Amino acid sequence: MLVEWNLSSEVGNYIRTKKKRRRIDLKFMSIMSWKPENAQKVTELFAKWEIPKGLKFLYPPCTVLGGDKSVSIFETTDEAWAKVDRYWRHTCTIETYPLMESSEIAKIK
Image 1: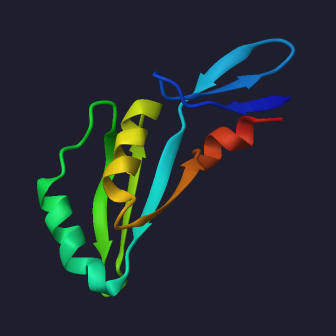
Image 2 (image 1 turned 90 degrees about the vertical axis):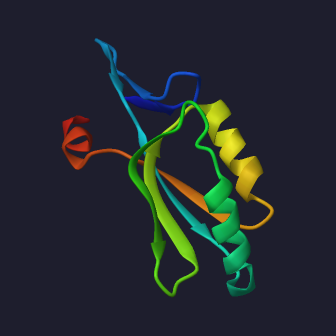
């Protein structure tokens, strides 16, 4: 079985088997972190930030209190994610991880 992870204008993942092909949407978890001295700048940027078309939050950005980090879960297109990266990269470090429901992983043989 081959698992492909491919961001495109349509968010998702395809699982291929010899018999069939089925679509499984991937979600992503993002952890943004910043230096303590940039905390005020991050707050100002967040207040002005407009969520790009194609980015859908499933769990909105939440600040880790006292941790200089923010966590969110979302679905996105590659174009929307590029806009997020460009907006935040000069102030924050962004770690992004693909997520899949455990019940879906259990179906993969």
